Length: 301
Image 1 (tube, rainbow, N blue to C red):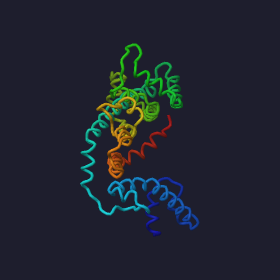
Image 2 (image 1 turned 60 degrees about the horizontal axis):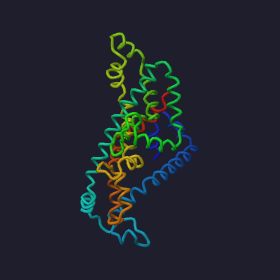
Image 3 (image 1 turned 180 degrees about the vertical axis):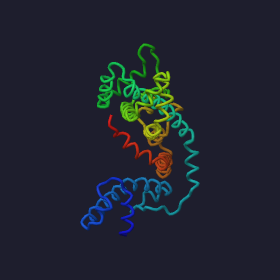
Image 4 (image 1 turned 30 degrees about the vertical axis):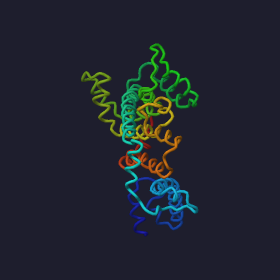
């Protein structure tokens, strides 16, 4: 065990405890105490997901049995296909993907350009705009009502956008958090690249397309993950804007099913597990970029 612990800590570049600290006997209880706390927190997060996954394969009688059981008596994989076809889950998956793609495009293009302008172009009054963007993150939820009314009757053109993806896409393109995230990252790009492109006659927009974006793969990956996970689990605005239409995403479909009879509890729990499975796969594939987003978000502007 001592050799394993030493190998783990020898690769660390930073942290509260190093391999040298672990040679001291009084530091080992601290390490194992922190390890047990993290293990306990991990179990709190994982147990509900595991319980939902296993309960979906139980029968109704097993689900309401007293005392409750953790493992189902048998696992019928055909139940997955039955639930999939019953609710036409593929259609709602497609709706969610369409919603995510639009939110991603608006997020990267509009918020990325805004962050680039605040970071490198810096027009007159950019400092005031930057402060206002930051203050907008502190607005309470009372902005929901006037924002909804704006989409019901868009000023000047008087168009009702309810029943389309466009309002949610536009809101995704006005994320103060992502604007500041882009700005902080662009501040870390050396000015030499931008000045050299400017001397070659490249316009500010051309510099953004040809220089900034190719160098911004890390931040684009991080914002992409935040957008995908946030949009997939977004319920309120899709419910308000897309309710009772054929454009409903998975989150709205789950809510509508919960308020209707006809689906047993075990099948509904299985449906819940199937709906969160895509995000579990996203995290498993892009976990390195998700953790890297913490460092990117902390870059000094």
